[in-house]
Amino acid sequence: MVTGAHGQVGRCLVDRGADGLTRDDLDLATAGTAEFRATASALLTGDRRPDVMVNTAAWTDVDGAEDPQNRRTVEAVNAVAPAELARVAAAAGVRFIHVSTDYVFSGPAPDGSRGWGADDPVNPANEYGRTKSEGDHGVLDAGGTVVRTSWVWSGPDAPGRDFVSVMATLAENGVDPRVVDDQVGRPTYAPDLAGELWTLARLDGPSGILNITNSGEPVSWYGLAREVFRCTGHDPARVSPCTTRDWPTPAARPPWSVLDLGPWTARSGQTPPDWRDSVRRGLGSRFRLG
Ligand SMILES: NC(=O)c1ccc[n+]([C@@H]2O[C@H](COP(=O)([O-])OP(=O)(O)OC[C@H]3O[C@@H](n4cnc5c(N)ncnc54)[C@H](OP(=O)(O)O)[C@@H]3O)[C@@H](O)[C@H]2O)c1
Image 1 (cartoon, helix red, strand yellow):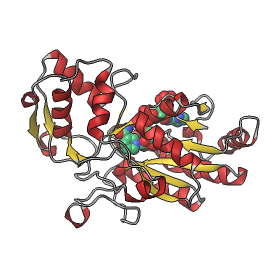
Image 2 (image 1 turned 30 degrees about the vertical axis):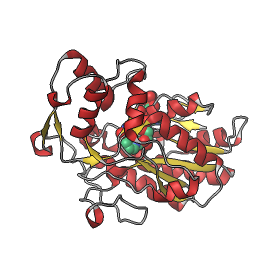
Image 3 (image 1 turned 60 degrees about the vertical axis):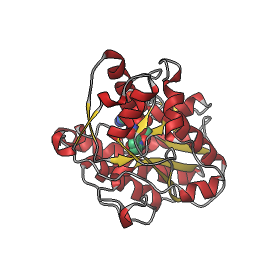
């Protein structure tokens, strides 16, 4: 069973056969109420009772989360709901997997260049990261598993906009973008993440924190944009670099979003696909690849 059935990751899990919940089934903004707990409990104990629940639903508008008018909802959806769902799942004997984010970190690369690990102290720089981090704690306290991922995209065939699709469209439309070159991470193709989550749901093992992203060399948004231009047969030199300071946003962004994949590859026995291969795959059906 998966929450966020219409979201990037949730949709891909539903495509694989998961039972999808939308906000009409369970509104995470009502977390903290008896009604929320009763609805969640009915879903996890009734006819639809799953073996595993994956919570992909979240408030993901990072800049919107800074607006004081949204604070209460963001807190309910990202911090309170995951903890309550994890507790209800534990009571129902249902394994609980919660999807979280690199934005719980905000510092430069630990030890100069390694990915963030499960034991690194969190230090969120914005409301989205703070509330997601709170959610992680609640899930762990209830015995659930937290899966942190980064830079999720779905491609032009999926509804909605993501960085890769936007860059591909700019390339096709003759627009030459400036893109930040001082935020580094690993992009994660939503169908790949769903595949890894599906594997995790079927694997026995301890709960706790795991990182799952695509693999490959870390890259900046600028580098990713260049790769999209290159893959779609356009000159990557049309993309120019800028700094985070040139592109101010309401929410601060972390400079280092690379997550350590070691524990997940050891547990699953497989390395997630390289992000470069996934970009080609994700753009393939709509664009003439270069
Ligand atoms: N996107 C990224 O780059 C990224 C990076 C790192 C981690 N993550 C994490 O990965 C997970 C999945 O992200 P995503 O990109 O798939 O997100 P997404 O496409 O924005 O989807 C989020 C889903 O959450 C649902 N939702 C929001 N508020 C809700 C509420 N009050 N009640 C019930 N459902 C609600 C949305 O429902 P509607 O469809 O009705 O709006 C939507 O289906 C999230 O936990 C996110 O924090 C994402």
